[in-house]
Image (cartoon, rainbow, N blue to C red; front, side):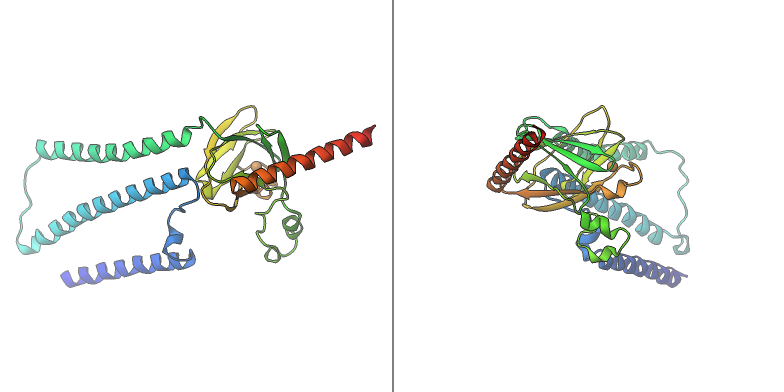
Length: 278
Ligand SMILES: [Cu+2]
């Protein structure tokens, strides 16, 4: 009887291990099945919070199930044990109220700190206004007066009815990526010109809705230069899947160069348009 129990427990554990190993292999290593760390202070904060709570939960799980299984095995009926007959225990009730309360408060303190940090959009180094449209994004660098639209790249668009494998970053490429400086606090003002969209770049650890007639705020401080990709994350119509987000994070100097070049180009286009219309 007992060896049967041991055999089925071992089979169960082996099954769990196989499932986890398969999941990790599919996700590309053990790191692939965890929450991504991301590249902003907020994403790191969320990751650290997640790991802290995970490990606290693992310790609680080991203690609770350890005590449970040891008690079940050591005090089994087959070993001659009789069940206790008490119906009420004030001490046990106090213990099972106070211990979870302390655990929940220990969760709530770091969680509240992280949430307050996430919502603190004060004193930004620059502000980027993001407007969602069916089905593209408009970006406005509020302090610098640079404005442009960002559409799905033509390479991806032409592959929609062709072979998606033939293009790199299929449906995750745009014509005009957003360029942002590394290490600066960027405040994003999110709104929409038609229906609700949602601006989401997973590596930044933040996602917020862009709602018509309303501004949502969030902030990011990108810590590593690179290209980060995301998508609209609120079902917004037939081309919802075709309005990706690409952010190029550059060093401050490279960002300033890009900004100056973009401004000069916008100025040239403006002059050319006004000359043509005369
Ligand atoms: Cu959308």
